[in-house]
Length: 275
Length: 201
Picture 1 (spheres, chains in turn cyan, purple):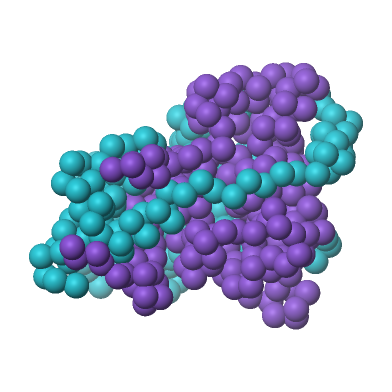
Picture 2: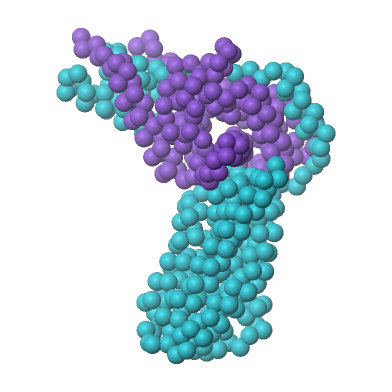
């Protein structure tokens, strides 16, 4: 193949790449001229755009399916929009955090500076919003996701850790393990019912995924429950020092996310075993 | 050039008929038995083609097909009339395929967790002329499954990149990347198979 022709083939490839997916697109005049003379491109794009083979479904199979569907046919209420579900999830986050925090001493709020409070509040609110949106996308099949579920879990964690590392003082914490264990334990205890609550809401969506896909859903629910715990700990904990927050408050998020992942994975395995 | 028509994707349903699908789905949600019949009639060929992996016995394909419709039935409340229907249908079908693959693997006593659908078996379906995947179908079996399903939806189902992203629970960027890689692989395969004879006259 001459260099000139190869370059022309590549330009046709690029044109197809750009336009593929737009039904009924029209090739440029240059590309058409090239296709007239190039067997390679005619062959390749002939395959790509040849009519698909016809598949017929046996009538008895269709009838059987129709009967099964009609036997349990009843009106259903369509799920809300993604935005509405996301807002509901976010409200659960906010209400849980506010209600539980209101029963505790606001020592953390009194210790933090305005800048620290604003920074950590922004990180938690944005993180919760992102996780709510991700969970809503995972509940509704065919949703257009702007970011992946994995990124939606990673970004809030990274945002919290970065905010703490930048805004909070790096001092040698007192009673590092004793106070830390208390925060980790309290945070985990709060995260459990919260995660159950989020799990209940998620079950209202399509329960299609299994295996790692369902585990990702569990991890997302665990992560948002972990953020509820962190929010409460931030309001309640006196030790607003970077090392304590990174290790123990961040640890709550890690534990709850991992627990959500593993529990969903196990549940999926049990369900598989019962099939 | 007389062959210009071959550059047009050929969807199974024309766009006017396809436009009626969301309305049928809404009637299905309202409990209309006529809508069930119409949806099953219109969507079943697409679903059957999507669910059939090369080498899979006909009986398994039919089981998978029935299971897929039952899942559609159970999840029908999650469809919203403002959204396109085909990505929703394919998203359900994709989960059905994935779970069937996992079950098959379990039966083979190889418990492997996957987040992507199965690799194709690489053998064309035997003994049923209408299931012959054709030249294009055989070419697709050379692709990794994640790329194959993207090309299938773009090419066979005539879906847009955004619709494929919806159906595969992915992002538009990830779909574009998979499609791009798939074309590259197809080009390499064709060239390797000696179909790259250029008519340099």
